[in-house]
Amino acid sequence: MRNMLPVLLFAALLSACGSLGANAGGSLSAPLTAVNYTDWPFDWVGVATVAEPEKAMAADRATAFGASGQMCCVSLPEKWQPGMELVVQTQDGTHAKSAKEWGQEHIPIINHRVVVPRYDSSDVGTVWVQLLPGGNVELVVSRFDPTHAQWPGKVKGWPVPTVEYRRNIWDRDMKEKESSVRLYAELLSEIDTLDLGKMKENWDSDQKYSKDNIKGFKGYDDPAYRAYKKAYCKENLVFWQQEVKLYERLKP
Image 1 (cartoon, rainbow, N blue to C red):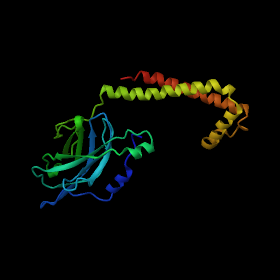
Image 2 (cartoon, rainbow, N blue to C red):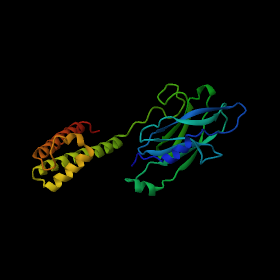
Image 3 (cartoon, rainbow, N blue to C red):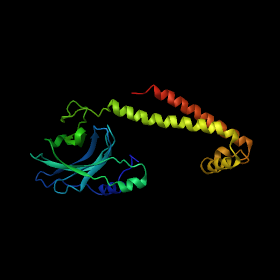
Image 4 (cartoon, rainbow, N blue to C red):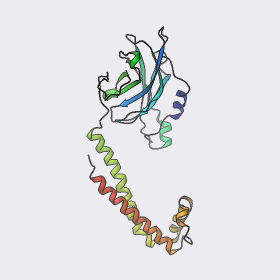
């Protein structure tokens, strides 16, 4: 559920790009990219004008220690103006574990007024939003990315996950792999004595989801079908045992 997006809100952004404000020298449009230097995802990162702070010109999501794609478009005056500001909208990633929980969560969108640093019209490639620890937000307008030698922003380089974050991800994934080992070990130990009622449940499930795999069997009471299920459980048990061993070597 952490990856669930407010898709209905995103749809509204695809119609047009907003405007920062009128300028005698004209305006420029640039895509938005959000870069997240924190250990928590954002389901919404948008950029709006100070005049219309609730109306995002462009928005996307950003994973923990990751970056968004490019979303069109943020409108900027062709000439930078001292004191120029934009509003960066952020919404924390969901804590929900089901669609029902997500629908009841109502995480607020927070508006941050952020100064737009000096830029030149020849350098307007992307509007970069840098999401920093402590709720801090930086804006950079540049055709270079954060790793480039000519990157003008204070925070340089792509996000680097902390050891603590990497260990938490490793622990989560390892628990899932170990759970699969336990599941197939239990199924394998039971398959020889499984009653026909349970075998029928397996058969019905295979008929629905993997019908081609059981074409050669007469039915749920076919001894060959039971042997097939036993081999299936054993194959998966060996696979997940190997996965656990390999993943142990990758512990941060």
